[in-house]
Length: 447
Ligand code: ATP
Ligand code: MG
Image 1 (cartoon, rainbow, N blue to C red):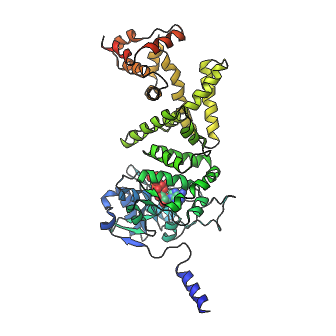
Image 2 (cartoon, rainbow, N blue to C red):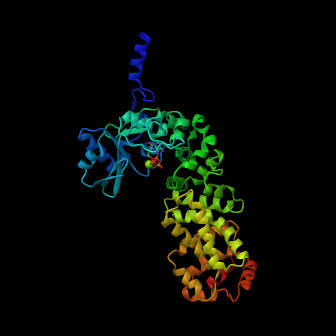
Image 3 (cartoon, helix red, strand yellow):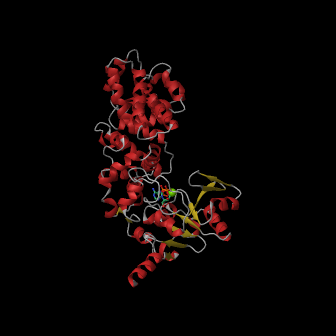
């Protein structure tokens, strides 16, 4: 009897999965100062708090600042409903149908404000036959909002007013100990949302954290669950991964976790094509470098490199079958993109960019007559040339070809005429190119 009573009291005090009181961590221990938060995010929090709501900067931004990285964007979590948020900010709009969030615009910034959400619970929510949660749209308490997040380091709530971090799951300590730890039972959390496996690999690589063995262990055996994730969501996640500035590290991590195998055709392509492997790693290193230098990276260019060797194989096969080179290339491009689209919803715009870059490639082989001048005028010339250079760096083409184009583009218009490489028929051109030592084509520039 007493035991029963005790159990009931206990259960009420600490229901399953709900953590007890959170730690309130002062700035001296986490180091995040108000001036490291964007003015817009600060403003959104204070306005909400002055109206009597709870409001915190949450998620990736707090985590990134603590590890010394610059956050991409700032998200705010609040106890206010979307309608209440909307009413407080003139330049704001409610977006999303299933789970409404509010975009608050301030200057050039947009702050995403979401209302505390209740925990996902595979038993009471709608799931697919593998346990993947299909709906996640119930408002909840702040503690529940913390518990439904994926990793402890992602469940930190920063209050700009007093510069404290509210920490329900020892996220600050985990960050300081360089551990990526799942909130709750990793198996359950992966079943609810298999994309968390990819997030683990990406965030581990990005933040330099090691994945806690409990979260790392089940990935290999559960990797197949990713097959049920909608292609558009996978594409978003892959894009984040590839454009993170740590693509090489992320993909190594994925390979180590056994996450690439037979899972996404794209990953198979990246990691298991012997011929293109050098090309793909070169391109990923190149992308990482650009991201780190703050230079723009186009998803089209990136996917064009990842899939190029598939196109080459297909293209060669068609040509060997007697098809003409140019139409064969277009057929090959379409067939490669079609094959990917079943799993990975490459958006139409990006597919267009990819094709543009591929379609320019054969045109770089023509260095006679009017064609080179026309190619220089192409709006996508620069992307096409960058792509050509990667091909050469990987050993697919002689370096002399991109070098020639660089010299041709830089040359005085009057000097260009003398640089053209006569091209009556393809064979002469090929033989001539192979015999020339690398760099020879730059000679005419100074003439
Ligand atoms: P980054 O923005 O650097 O890519 P992030 O952690 O901020 O990383 P977002 O996709 O912006 O990633 O998500 C914001 C926050 O939402 C996360 O920090 C996490 O708390 C929560 N979150 C995102 N995806 C999931 C998920 N699949 N399961 C549970 N919580 C998630
Ligand atoms: Mg984020």
